[in-house]
Length: 141
Image (cartoon, rainbow, N blue to C red; front, side, top):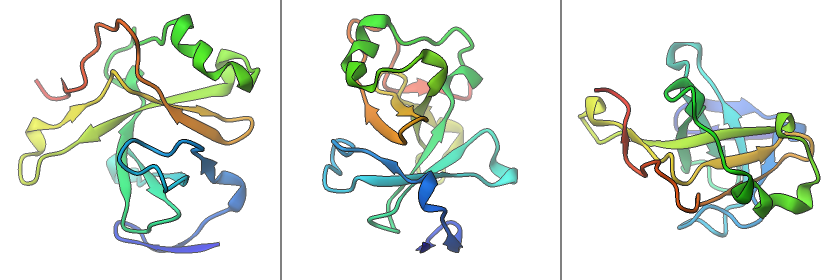
């Protein structure tokens, strides 16, 4: 399947890599299909590209790249009990916000990670309860 994106131009996407977000992402509930894309020059950042709207994408990052001790509490993982999977079958990403013209002020939302079931290619954005993590964690200090 081909998609014409703002950041990558026209690219071919393997349909097996499409991640279904049944609840969408807050503010974008009707956009449910995404794919993770990466450019070598922007590692460790990835792009969570919407397949339903080629102009919609989110910069994401594995939170452990910034906070090696980052974990999701067992009670928060219970929100995904229907997945019936082991912890090693999930990936976790945080959405990064980069203010226009001020990349040094970029933040990441560690309080509401995207959790992806790699086995069934389904994801959710969950809000961590009673978390000490910030929704605006400064990435460059």
